[in-house]
Amino acid sequence: MRYIIIGAGAVGGTVGGRLAQAGREVVLVARGAHLAALREHGLRLRVPQGESTHRLPAVDGPGPLGELRPDDVLVLAVKTQDTVAALETWAGTPVAGGGTAAERLPLVCLQNGVESGRLALRRFRRVYGVCVWLPSTFVEPGVVSAAGAPLTGVLHLGRTPHGTDDTAHRIAADLTDAHFEAPVVPDVARWQYAKLLGNLGNALEAVSGPVASEPAEALFARVRAEGEAVLDAAGIAYAGAGEQRAARGDKVTLVPLDGAPRGGGSSWQSLVRGTGTIEADYLNGEIVLLGRLHGVPTPLNELLQRLANEFAREGRPAGSLPVADLVRLADEVVRQGG
Image (tube, rainbow, N blue to C red; front, side, top):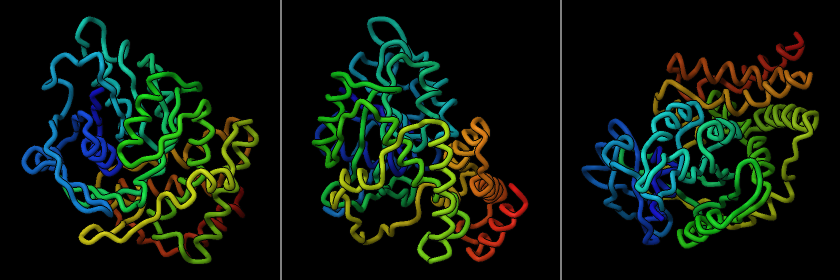
Protein backbone atom coordinates (compact mmCIF):
# COMPACT_ATOMS: atom_id res chain seq x y z
CA MET A 1 0.00 0.00 0.00
CA ARG A 2 1.06 3.59 -0.64
CA TYR A 3 0.24 6.09 2.11
CA ILE A 4 -0.72 9.61 1.06
CA ILE A 5 -0.40 11.82 4.15
CA ILE A 6 -2.77 14.75 3.68
CA GLY A 7 -1.41 17.28 6.16
CA ALA A 8 2.19 16.31 6.90
CA GLY A 9 2.53 18.41 10.06
CA ALA A 10 3.40 17.20 13.55
CA VAL A 11 1.20 14.09 13.58
CA GLY A 12 1.05 13.43 9.85
CA GLY A 13 4.75 14.06 9.36
CA THR A 14 5.67 11.76 12.21
CA VAL A 15 3.48 8.92 10.94
CA GLY A 16 4.71 9.45 7.38
CA GLY A 17 8.33 9.53 8.45
CA ARG A 18 8.03 6.44 10.61
CA LEU A 19 6.25 4.54 7.82
CA ALA A 20 9.02 5.54 5.42
CA GLN A 21 11.62 4.31 7.91
CA ALA A 22 9.81 0.98 7.92
CA GLY A 23 10.11 0.74 4.15
CA ARG A 24 6.56 1.74 3.24
CA GLU A 25 5.82 3.97 0.26
CA VAL A 26 4.76 7.45 1.40
CA VAL A 27 3.66 10.69 -0.25
CA LEU A 28 3.50 13.89 1.81
CA VAL A 29 0.91 16.60 1.18
CA ALA A 30 1.72 20.04 2.55
CA ARG A 31 1.70 23.70 1.60
CA GLY A 32 3.66 26.92 1.89
CA ALA A 33 7.07 27.01 3.53
CA HIS A 34 6.68 23.46 4.85
CA LEU A 35 6.12 22.09 1.35
CA ALA A 36 9.11 24.03 0.02
CA ALA A 37 11.34 22.66 2.79
CA LEU A 38 10.14 19.10 2.22
CA ARG A 39 10.93 19.37 -1.48
CA GLU A 40 14.34 20.97 -0.96
CA HIS A 41 15.66 19.15 2.09
CA GLY A 42 13.33 16.21 2.70
CA LEU A 43 11.41 15.45 5.90
CA ARG A 44 13.62 15.62 8.97
CA LEU A 45 12.21 13.46 11.76
CA ARG A 46 13.63 13.76 15.27
CA VAL A 47 12.89 10.89 17.65
CA PRO A 48 14.69 9.47 20.71
CA GLN A 49 16.61 7.06 18.46
CA GLY A 50 18.09 9.99 16.52
CA GLU A 51 17.32 12.25 13.57
CA SER A 52 16.65 10.90 10.09
CA THR A 53 15.93 12.57 6.76
CA HIS A 54 13.43 11.12 4.29
CA ARG A 55 13.39 12.25 0.68
CA LEU A 56 9.76 11.59 -0.12
CA PRO A 57 7.45 12.86 -2.87
CA ALA A 58 5.89 16.09 -1.60
CA VAL A 59 2.88 17.66 -3.30
CA ASP A 60 0.29 20.34 -2.60
CA GLY A 61 -2.68 18.27 -3.78
CA PRO A 62 -3.68 15.37 -6.02
CA GLY A 63 -2.84 17.10 -9.32
CA PRO A 64 0.87 16.15 -9.51
CA LEU A 65 0.05 12.51 -8.76
CA GLY A 66 -2.28 12.03 -11.71
CA GLU A 67 -4.55 9.03 -11.30
CA LEU A 68 -4.39 7.54 -7.84
CA ARG A 69 -3.54 3.88 -7.39
CA PRO A 70 -6.01 1.23 -6.22
CA ASP A 71 -3.63 0.40 -3.36
CA ASP A 72 -3.45 3.99 -2.06
CA VAL A 73 -4.49 4.80 1.50
CA LEU A 74 -5.46 8.42 2.13
CA VAL A 75 -4.44 9.53 5.63
CA LEU A 76 -6.22 12.71 6.64
CA ALA A 77 -4.07 14.51 9.21
CA VAL A 78 -5.19 18.13 8.83
CA LYS A 79 -6.90 19.92 11.71
CA THR A 80 -10.65 19.33 11.79
CA GLN A 81 -11.40 22.89 10.68
CA ASP A 82 -9.58 22.09 7.41
CA THR A 83 -11.31 18.75 6.83
CA VAL A 84 -14.07 19.88 4.47
CA ALA A 85 -11.62 21.59 2.12
CA ALA A 86 -9.40 18.50 2.07
CA LEU A 87 -12.33 16.19 1.38
CA GLU A 88 -13.48 18.38 -1.49
CA THR A 89 -9.97 18.37 -2.94
CA TRP A 90 -9.44 14.61 -2.85
CA ALA A 91 -12.87 12.96 -3.10
CA GLY A 92 -13.27 13.30 -6.84
CA THR A 93 -9.72 12.36 -7.80
CA PRO A 94 -9.79 9.52 -10.37
CA VAL A 95 -8.35 6.12 -9.50
CA ALA A 96 -6.66 3.92 -12.08
CA GLY A 97 -9.13 1.37 -13.39
CA GLY A 98 -12.14 3.58 -12.86
CA GLY A 99 -13.99 5.36 -10.10
CA THR A 100 -12.90 8.06 -7.70
CA ALA A 101 -11.03 8.20 -4.43
CA ALA A 102 -14.30 8.62 -2.53
CA GLU A 103 -15.72 5.52 -4.15
CA ARG A 104 -12.72 3.22 -4.01
CA LEU A 105 -10.03 4.22 -1.53
CA PRO A 106 -9.84 3.97 2.27
CA LEU A 107 -9.66 7.27 4.13
CA VAL A 108 -8.04 7.20 7.57
CA CYS A 109 -8.92 10.12 9.87
CA LEU A 110 -5.76 10.65 11.93
CA GLN A 111 -7.24 13.55 13.89
CA ASN A 112 -8.48 14.69 17.25
CA GLY A 113 -12.17 14.79 18.02
CA VAL A 114 -15.01 12.89 16.38
CA GLU A 115 -16.39 15.25 13.75
CA SER A 116 -14.02 14.47 10.87
CA GLY A 117 -15.25 10.90 10.55
CA ARG A 118 -18.83 12.12 10.21
CA LEU A 119 -17.80 14.70 7.63
CA ALA A 120 -15.82 12.09 5.71
CA LEU A 121 -18.72 9.64 5.57
CA ARG A 122 -20.69 12.20 3.59
CA ARG A 123 -18.15 11.77 0.77
CA PHE A 124 -16.15 8.57 1.26
CA ARG A 125 -17.54 5.03 1.39
CA ARG A 126 -14.70 3.58 3.47
CA VAL A 127 -13.72 5.68 6.45
CA TYR A 128 -11.47 4.64 9.33
CA GLY A 129 -11.11 6.42 12.65
CA VAL A 130 -8.02 6.62 14.82
CA CYS A 131 -7.68 7.52 18.48
CA VAL A 132 -4.42 9.46 18.27
CA TRP A 133 -2.08 9.12 21.24
CA LEU A 134 1.04 10.59 19.62
CA PRO A 135 2.96 13.41 21.34
CA SER A 136 4.62 15.27 18.48
CA THR A 137 5.73 18.77 17.54
CA PHE A 138 6.06 20.80 14.36
CA VAL A 139 9.53 22.22 15.00
CA GLU A 140 9.98 24.31 11.84
CA PRO A 141 9.23 23.90 8.13
CA GLY A 142 10.49 20.49 7.09
CA VAL A 143 11.17 19.32 10.65
CA VAL A 144 8.92 17.40 13.05
CA SER A 145 9.71 15.64 16.29
CA ALA A 146 8.14 12.91 18.40
CA ALA A 147 9.62 12.30 21.83
CA GLY A 148 7.87 9.04 22.74
CA ALA A 149 9.81 5.89 23.63
CA PRO A 150 9.98 2.95 23.36
CA LEU A 151 6.99 3.45 21.05
CA THR A 152 6.29 6.63 19.14
CA GLY A 153 2.55 6.43 19.79
CA VAL A 154 -0.53 4.30 20.38
CA LEU A 155 -3.11 4.47 17.59
CA HIS A 156 -6.38 2.61 18.15
CA LEU A 157 -7.87 1.99 14.71
CA GLY A 158 -11.23 0.83 13.37
CA ARG A 159 -13.97 1.43 10.83
CA THR A 160 -16.16 4.49 11.25
CA PRO A 161 -18.71 4.33 12.80
CA HIS A 162 -17.84 0.81 14.00
CA GLY A 163 -16.39 -2.49 12.91
CA THR A 164 -13.12 -3.83 11.53
CA ASP A 165 -11.95 -5.33 8.26
CA ASP A 166 -8.88 -6.65 6.49
CA THR A 167 -7.77 -3.18 5.42
CA ALA A 168 -7.72 -2.00 9.03
CA HIS A 169 -5.55 -4.97 9.98
CA ARG A 170 -3.15 -4.35 7.09
CA ILE A 171 -2.77 -0.68 8.04
CA ALA A 172 -2.26 -1.67 11.67
CA ALA A 173 0.46 -4.13 10.68
CA ASP A 174 2.32 -1.39 8.81
CA LEU A 175 1.99 0.97 11.78
CA THR A 176 3.26 -1.73 14.11
CA ASP A 177 6.38 -2.09 11.96
CA ALA A 178 6.80 1.70 12.20
CA HIS A 179 7.23 2.01 16.01
CA PHE A 180 3.53 2.33 16.87
CA GLU A 181 1.11 0.13 18.69
CA ALA A 182 -2.05 0.00 16.59
CA PRO A 183 -4.82 -2.06 18.17
CA VAL A 184 -7.67 -2.77 15.74
CA VAL A 185 -10.91 -2.28 17.65
CA PRO A 186 -14.58 -2.59 16.65
CA ASP A 187 -15.54 0.42 18.76
CA VAL A 188 -13.00 3.08 17.82
CA ALA A 189 -15.46 5.88 18.63
CA ARG A 190 -15.42 4.82 22.28
CA TRP A 191 -11.69 5.50 22.37
CA GLN A 192 -12.04 8.74 20.41
CA TYR A 193 -14.62 10.11 22.85
CA ALA A 194 -12.32 9.21 25.73
CA LYS A 195 -9.49 11.11 24.03
CA LEU A 196 -11.89 14.01 23.42
CA LEU A 197 -12.36 14.40 27.17
CA GLY A 198 -8.61 14.79 27.57
CA ASN A 199 -8.43 17.19 24.63
CA LEU A 200 -10.84 19.55 26.40
CA GLY A 201 -7.72 20.86 28.12
CA ASN A 202 -6.11 21.86 24.82
CA ALA A 203 -7.85 25.24 24.78
CA LEU A 204 -7.00 25.83 28.44
CA GLU A 205 -3.34 25.17 27.69
CA ALA A 206 -3.45 27.33 24.57
CA VAL A 207 -4.75 30.42 26.34
CA SER A 208 -3.14 30.03 29.80
CA GLY A 209 -0.14 27.73 29.41
CA PRO A 210 0.60 24.24 30.74
CA VAL A 211 -2.04 22.61 32.90
CA ALA A 212 0.46 22.03 35.69
CA SER A 213 -0.49 24.28 38.59
CA GLU A 214 -3.11 23.37 41.16
CA PRO A 215 -5.57 26.07 39.94
CA ALA A 216 -5.16 24.97 36.31
CA GLU A 217 -5.63 21.31 37.17
CA ALA A 218 -8.71 22.11 39.25
CA LEU A 219 -10.22 24.11 36.40
CA PHE A 220 -9.52 21.34 33.92
CA ALA A 221 -11.24 18.86 36.23
CA ARG A 222 -14.36 21.04 36.12
CA VAL A 223 -14.17 21.32 32.33
CA ARG A 224 -13.79 17.56 31.97
CA ALA A 225 -16.66 16.93 34.39
CA GLU A 226 -18.91 18.96 32.07
CA GLY A 227 -17.79 16.77 29.20
CA GLU A 228 -18.47 13.56 31.07
CA ALA A 229 -21.92 14.77 32.11
CA VAL A 230 -22.75 15.58 28.49
CA LEU A 231 -21.56 12.22 27.13
CA ASP A 232 -23.48 10.39 29.84
CA ALA A 233 -26.66 12.37 29.05
CA ALA A 234 -26.22 11.60 25.36
CA GLY A 235 -25.71 7.90 26.05
CA ILE A 236 -22.28 7.96 24.42
CA ALA A 237 -19.84 5.32 25.65
CA TYR A 238 -16.20 6.18 26.27
CA ALA A 239 -13.23 4.25 27.58
CA GLY A 240 -12.56 4.89 31.24
CA ALA A 241 -9.36 6.34 32.66
CA GLY A 242 -8.24 2.97 34.01
CA GLU A 243 -8.78 1.26 30.68
CA GLN A 244 -6.79 3.98 28.92
CA ARG A 245 -3.92 3.70 31.39
CA ALA A 246 -3.86 -0.06 30.95
CA ALA A 247 -3.78 0.30 27.16
CA ARG A 248 -0.97 2.85 27.17
CA GLY A 249 1.04 1.73 30.19
CA ASP A 250 4.62 2.95 29.90
CA LYS A 251 4.73 2.41 26.15
CA VAL A 252 5.08 6.13 25.27
CA THR A 253 7.38 7.91 27.72
CA LEU A 254 8.55 11.38 26.72
CA VAL A 255 12.31 11.73 26.28
CA PRO A 256 13.99 15.17 25.98
CA LEU A 257 15.24 15.73 22.44
CA ASP A 258 18.17 18.02 21.61
CA GLY A 259 17.10 20.79 19.26
CA ALA A 260 13.46 19.80 19.46
CA PRO A 261 11.89 21.07 22.67
CA ARG A 262 8.50 19.59 23.45
CA GLY A 263 6.00 22.39 23.08
CA GLY A 264 2.35 22.31 23.99
CA GLY A 265 -0.43 20.31 22.40
CA SER A 266 -1.99 20.79 19.01
CA SER A 267 -4.02 23.90 19.90
CA TRP A 268 -1.05 25.57 21.58
CA GLN A 269 1.05 24.85 18.49
CA SER A 270 -1.61 26.43 16.24
CA LEU A 271 -1.32 29.68 18.20
CA VAL A 272 2.47 29.60 18.20
CA ARG A 273 2.52 29.08 14.44
CA GLY A 274 -0.02 31.86 13.91
CA THR A 275 -2.26 29.78 11.67
CA GLY A 276 -5.26 32.00 12.40
CA THR A 277 -7.48 29.03 13.25
CA ILE A 278 -7.78 26.58 16.11
CA GLU A 279 -9.65 23.30 16.63
CA ALA A 280 -11.63 24.34 19.71
CA ASP A 281 -14.94 24.28 17.80
CA TYR A 282 -14.49 20.52 17.38
CA LEU A 283 -13.17 19.73 20.87
CA ASN A 284 -14.81 21.96 23.48
CA GLY A 285 -17.37 22.82 20.80
CA GLU A 286 -18.36 19.17 20.48
CA ILE A 287 -19.28 19.16 24.17
CA VAL A 288 -21.13 22.46 23.76
CA LEU A 289 -23.11 21.04 20.83
CA LEU A 290 -24.03 17.86 22.67
CA GLY A 291 -24.91 19.86 25.78
CA ARG A 292 -27.35 21.97 23.80
CA LEU A 293 -28.86 18.91 22.16
CA HIS A 294 -29.37 17.13 25.48
CA GLY A 295 -30.11 20.01 27.82
CA VAL A 296 -26.86 19.94 29.82
CA PRO A 297 -25.21 23.31 30.67
CA THR A 298 -21.60 23.63 29.48
CA PRO A 299 -20.51 27.17 30.48
CA LEU A 300 -16.84 26.31 31.00
CA ASN A 301 -16.43 24.61 27.64
CA GLU A 302 -18.26 27.50 25.99
CA LEU A 303 -15.84 29.92 27.63
CA LEU A 304 -12.75 28.01 26.50
CA GLN A 305 -14.13 27.63 22.98
CA ARG A 306 -14.74 31.37 22.74
CA LEU A 307 -11.38 32.37 24.20
CA ALA A 308 -9.40 29.95 22.03
CA ASN A 309 -11.08 31.30 18.89
CA GLU A 310 -10.41 34.88 19.98
CA PHE A 311 -6.74 34.10 20.57
CA ALA A 312 -6.43 32.50 17.12
CA ARG A 313 -8.34 35.23 15.32
CA GLU A 314 -6.54 38.12 17.04
CA GLY A 315 -3.08 36.56 17.00
CA ARG A 316 -2.70 36.70 20.79
CA PRO A 317 0.34 34.85 22.19
CA ALA A 318 -0.16 31.30 23.40
CA GLY A 319 -0.45 31.01 27.16
CA SER A 320 -0.72 34.78 27.72
CA LEU A 321 -3.89 34.79 29.87
CA PRO A 322 -2.87 34.20 33.51
CA VAL A 323 -4.59 31.14 34.89
CA ALA A 324 -5.84 33.13 37.88
CA ASP A 325 -7.67 35.46 35.50
CA LEU A 326 -9.08 32.51 33.59
CA VAL A 327 -10.36 30.94 36.80
CA ARG A 328 -12.08 34.23 37.71
CA LEU A 329 -13.71 34.33 34.28
CA ALA A 330 -14.82 30.72 34.70
CA ASP A 331 -16.32 31.38 38.10
CA GLU A 332 -18.16 34.41 36.73
CA VAL A 333 -19.74 32.59 33.78
CA VAL A 334 -20.87 29.81 36.12
CA ARG A 335 -22.42 32.35 38.51
CA GLN A 336 -24.22 33.96 35.60
CA GLY A 337 -25.53 30.59 34.47
CA GLY A 338 -23.41 30.41 31.32
